[in-house]
Length: 99
Image (cartoon, rainbow, N blue to C red; front, side, top):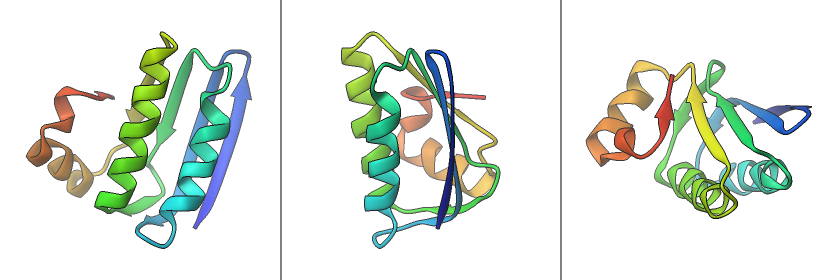
């Protein structure tokens, strides 16, 4: 899995490419840890991400909680149909800001 990142002032974008699964979730978690420091808005772009497992969902929730504690926001963009269904089925579509 490749992860592209971009910081623009207090905004940070993370764009994973490939799959976020039990093997790649630690890499994704590391990228998000770096992203939440000093960030007011974290955007995660799933345009090139094919799959997100429950391990990936755990990482997203942990980042969301950290950001919320720091009065920062997280949004998910370019969420594909399959991942959108997973978010809806788990109720996380009401937790995350999805565009």
